[in-house]
Length: 385
Image 1: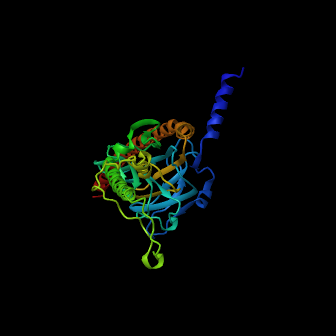
Image 2 (image 1 turned 180 degrees about the vertical axis):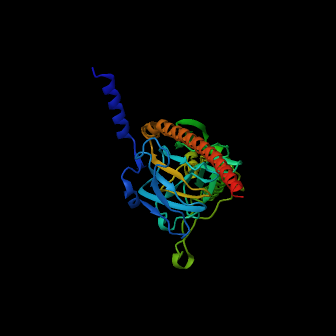
Image 3 (image 1 turned 30 degrees about the horizontal axis):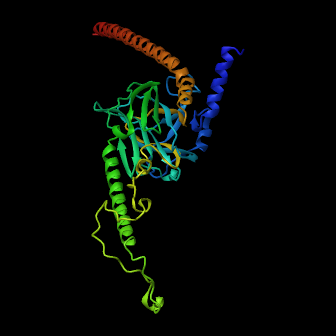
């Protein structure tokens, strides 16, 4: 019998094999990230990114990510991957964000784009499928955006989801499932969940779509019945006259028998019910056409945002169809460095307090020395007088 550890390892390996990872970025190869990420040149005033783990971190190399570097700027950068459709599959989007500068006003969210996005001209006007992540500005806005694109419009989650506002690294996860349920996680904990249909105020759109489709179906059904009504009252015993000229007179059609006006549900006697009866047409496609969380051509991920004060670090990007893989990836990245990061910050804070105290004491001593020196000068000046 295999040891428990071996079985666990086998399960983990199987999970990795079954998971589809569409995009994964940890910035572990130094400056070669520039070969994968494209800085937008749509505006010469766009801010620039650099690779950095910040002033404090859990691991100097593993915690390196894209850091904003200029205050009061828009930023636009993206990376492309092999296009895919999440139809019928779970879509998991995950990344870490660290507002080391203690964000006062600016975005920390990411966007998922269609594969035909123009990376060089990426801007706020570029169409996206999903926008997800924290947005902070003043005391009023401290929220997690979850915006989905549907029918050429952007729809926001109607539930207020509060984001983290401290200066540490946090793990943000969005899960969209094919059964139209969703979850938003921060640091591995579910902070919001529910129905995509209801939590995005899309039920009214769905009803309108359904009503329109059913109305069209009813008109088509009525037209079909009218045509059948006409067809089944033709005089079947009549024959085309011998002198009928199709080129001159057109196609011959048997004369109509005397019939009552058409009434819905009325059936001529003697007609086979399999021919006459029509099942009500039901639109079985409006749900699939509705595509509340299905995107056919996902092909890029990017940062398109504004920041008053720069310094945010984005890292550990992941797009997959497997929730468990995303959870394990989060534990292997953010989970391993979150503790050491806080420890380093605490040590630096103590050192800063100590340094500030020493400087205050030095200033105090210098003040006393300056006072004694001034008294010495005044004493000698009196002697000179």
